[in-house]
Amino acid sequence: MKSSRDRTWSVGEVAERFDLPTNVLRHWESVGLLTPERDSADRRRYARDDIARVAAIQRNKDAGMSLDQIAVLLDAGSPERHAVLRAHLDDLDRRMEQMRISREMTEHAFNCRAHDLTACPGFQRHVKDLMAAFD
Picture: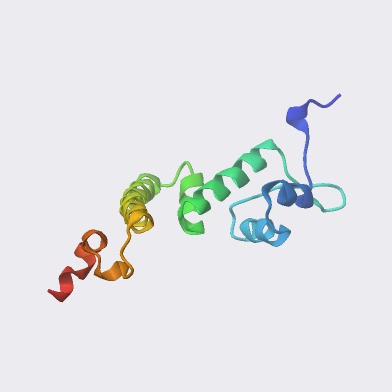
């Protein structure tokens, strides 16, 4: 009897569970990110390790990584791996700071009684750094 660790899934099952079109999984395979086994009818069969790779690809794409960066991430032997990861961490930090500022600006706008937000001094504080080039 096969254990649940030995179970495989079709491309359609994997796509459905990850809420992806099947052509996305096929594309990831064509660029070398996935290498599912094939059954006797030449249909893709995704094992647990393939599922983990799909999850890693999807999570990192959602975080803004390119497929090229993800390929390096998934290649344990890549000499560029740490440089790509450092650059991604730096990018995440930059984007998180932008989101923090955007959240503060949105909260201010939500609570502001001014009719013209762009003229509101409190609101302008949140875009001051971007407007500095015009001073």
